[in-house]
Amino acid sequence: MRLTALLTALMLPFLATAATAQDQFSPVITVNDSAITAYDLDQRRRLLVLFRAPGNLDDVARQQLIEERLKQQEMDRAGIRITPENIATEVEAFASRANLSLDQFQQILAQSGVAAATLEQFVQVGVTWRDYIRLRYSDQAQITDADIARALAQQSGSADALEVLLTEIIIPAPPPRAAEANAIATQIAQSRSQAEFEAAARQYSALPSRADGGRLNWLPLSNYPPALQGLISSLAVGEVTPPIPITNGVALFQMRGIREVPQARPTPTTVDYAAMAFADTAAAQSATLRVDTCDDLFGLAKGQPADVLTRETVAPDQVPQGIALELAKLDMDEASVTATGGGNALLVMMCGRAYGDALTDPEALRAQLQSQRLEQFANALLADLRAAAVIRP
Image (cartoon, rainbow, N blue to C red; front, side):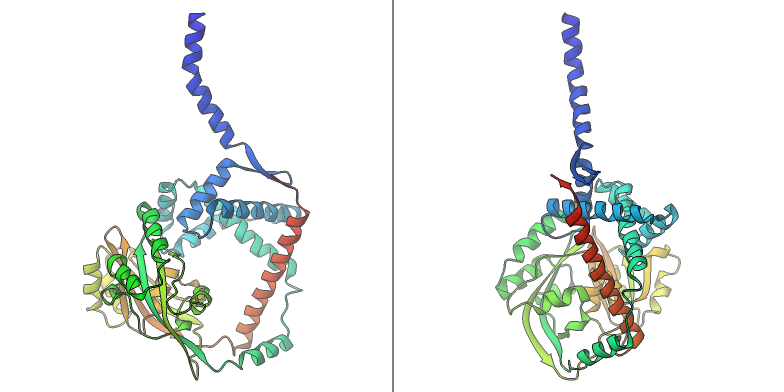
C-alpha cells in the first residue's frame, strides 16, 4: 500500500502535465465539423501581438480563425489547393514586406512563441482565398468602358486637395519592449493638449522632429499611406490618433490644422525609395551627409550584406507603414533617420514619386474597380457561409 501511494504521488505531476497538454489541443470552438483548439487561439493571439494588431486580440483571434475555417471549407469543396512551394514563396514575400529576410522573420516568430506552421496557415488561407475569389467571380467582376467613364466623371469633380498640419511621435517597439511601448502610446493617445503631446514627443519619439516637439510643416494628405488618410483627415484640431502599429514601433499623430488647397497635386501611383540599416543613429546621420541621391547609397553598401540596403519602386499602399510615414515628409533625394530599437537605426531616402495618375489611366482604374468589386463578392460569400454554418460555442 505504501509503495502504491508513493508511486501515485510521484505520477501526479506527470498526469497533470499530460492533462494540461490534452486540454490545450481539445476543441474550444467548432465550425461545422472543423475544430479550433485552445492552442490555435493562443498561437493566433501571439501572431496578432507580433503584428501589433489593434482591438481585443482574443476576439480578433476568434473571429479570424472562424472565418478562415469557413474559407478553407469552401475551398475544399471547390478543390482549390496551393502547393508547398507556393506557400514557401508567399511566406518569404510576407517577410520581405517587413524588410526582413526569411531567417530573420522566423527568428522573430520563434522568440514570440509563434510556430512557423501558424504563419504558413495564415498566409496559405489568405492567398488561396484571394485566388479562389478571382477564379469564381472573374466574369461577374468585369469592368465595362461605361463603368470607367462613370468613375472618371465622378472623380473629375474634386478640384481641391487636403493639406494637414501634424505633430508626430514614433516610439521604438522591438518585441522585448512592445508591451511597454504600446502602454506608453495608449496613455499619450488620451491627450488633447498640444503642449502635453509635444512634451511626450521630446521624451519618447525616435524621430529627429522630437527636437521641435514632433511638429511638422503643412504636408499633402496624399503623401501619407492610403490606409491612414481617412483616419488622419477625420481628426479634429487637438485630437490624437489611436496608436498605429508599424514595424518595430508604434506611431501617433496629433492634428494641429487641416486646409483645402486648389489645383490638387495628383496622387502618386508609384513611390521609389531606399532604406538602409545602420548600427546606430550617429552612423546613419553621418551617411546622410555623404549622399546626394539614392544611387549614392549603393556605394555605401558595397561589401556589406545584401539585406542592408533596400531599393523599391512600388504602389504607395505596398510601402511598409513605418517607412511610408517617413517618406510622407520627404521630397526627392531627401533623407530621414529613425531609431529602430536595440540601438540600431534606419536611413530612409525618397528617390522619387511617379504621378501617372491612376484616376485618368483607364486600365489602372479598371484594375482598381475590379479589385473593389471582387472584394464585395468575397465579403458577401463569407457572410453567406457564416449564416449557413453551425458554430459552437
